Amino acid sequence: MAVQIDFKPNRDLLDPKFESYRLSLDPLPVLKQQLSGGVESVDLGDDQYGYLHVRMAGIVNHLFQDSWAPECVFFASEAHHVFWVKLSQDGKLTKPRIVWQLPSDSSRPNANTTISFPCADWTVVSDGAGGIYLLSTPSRTEGEPWQLCHTYHVESCYPPCHLLHSVHYNFPSSHQVECLLAHISRPQDVEGNLKLSETTMHFVCVLEWISFSSAVGSETVSWNIKRQRRLVGGSFPNYAAIDPAGGALCLASEREFSFIYDSQKQNDKDEVEKVGDLKPSTPPLYTYIQSLEDITVVFKIPETITKGDIEVDFHLSSMEVKIRGKVVLQGLLWNNIDVEASTWTVEETKLEVILTKKETGLVWQELVKGDSRGEEVLDPALVEEIHNRLAHLTSENELIDGSAKPAYNPHQLEECDVSSEFFMFLRLEGDSHHVTHQSNIGGHQWLFQSMVSPEKLPTLCLRHDVDGLLWQPKNVLSEDEPEQFRVEHIATFPALGFVQASKQDRKYIVGSPDFSYAVLSDNTRHIYIYRQPESLNAAIELRNRKTGQEVSSIAKQHVVNLEQCDAILGLQACKHCIFVLSKYVLFAIKINES
Image (cartoon, helix red, strand yellow):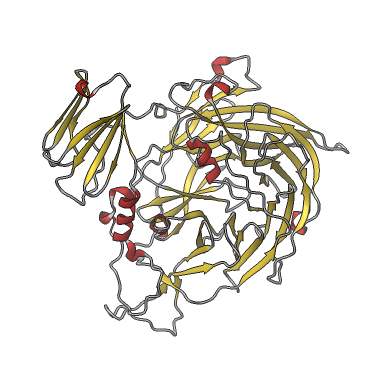
């Protein structure tokens, strides 16, 4: 049985008195490095139209940071060269240097290159079309050329594919590199013991977990495939990483994932089983979208259904929908409706029921109380209205009149600010395929993933109330601990959950490895930086003009407008600067001059 792990916040890392960010007009130095040849950036093809394709394309960050040397970043050019750039000790950007050329293959479809660094001496590169390259890179910090040691092509992989994570193991007699590759496929095209129903979805997400091994001590290092495992799920995972200490896989996903293939157990089908007691991948019975005045409910119906086959009865606090005498939906509504103003209509294969709210301005938490068969689609206008109600938590203008807004009250949180989606964190054992640890984190909006320490699992940042809380999954090696795996709250980014929701055009969001700031970018040229609250100098006395209370710390917000930047293709952060990648220019915003 899986152990239930607790995402319990550390109260010492929360700031209940946090009010807002103050816009700082202090200029931040911006370094520029012109790039010869455009950055590789391939859009989705006409046949890649599914929601999962869009989800995977949305996580593509074309700038790759070396977690073992955070001041070094890499990117691929349109000519399939891998370039290296570093922020040197004198605070300047080095000139881009080619460290490797991807093998040319005219038959390879256009796809984005992804890079992962399992250790300080090895690098894994995916060409986006199923090709995996294992390279020796002992001098990455100096930008020395990489040496190709092994090439492998995943035959069952459908481009585009994305390299999510990789780890390196040192054994007494061998080295081992494991990598995790994701791609989108039709259910009928997946190789393995697929258990998902093909009738419920057009596309599925496939995770290829591949292990490479080589002998230690040989003059020429020869790598071979040791093991290959395959998982399939109905959603693209927000978080997917290989546990560097225990041969397990950690996932945070909205849908179930199943092991469908294991090269070491391919003759034992009973060992390949569904993992996790997760929500079935069935389509919703209905969808609904609400504004401040009404709710529109949509049912999909067969073409043979006519208006005469449908009955809809409205009451003050309930409704009933019948199709050919069969009750489809019945029950108490979340709140009262205006019966006379409510109506319904049939259009081709769609039944629309429009409920007029009795109390306008109230956001309903659900449509019918206790009915979970429906799915809500958020209205952008409603979301914007909610953001305007909470706009006092951040500002685009410097606050000079000293007026203070009240601190955030969790009872003011609107329903649209709480994620009600099914969302699970799982740790899957690689040999038994069983879930060893799990936690339901539904209700906490996903923010971002970051690498705080290269020898540990990546961290995940979730929204709690309006804050962004950073969580570190970790293995506990002490014999005194009752559990060998847990998730710890290690840092808090105040009001980051609200701040990111207020940026409608946001593209990337990352946090610095030392937790000193978080940074967001939009699609074009704006960078928003949110620093942790800093204590004022004891010699400086600052008081709130309205309340007279002494102000002991200030949280600053910076807004940087990048010139010569038509589209932001990548964003990474280190302790001293923020790297921003555009098509022809690499920017470095110096954040901590000292």
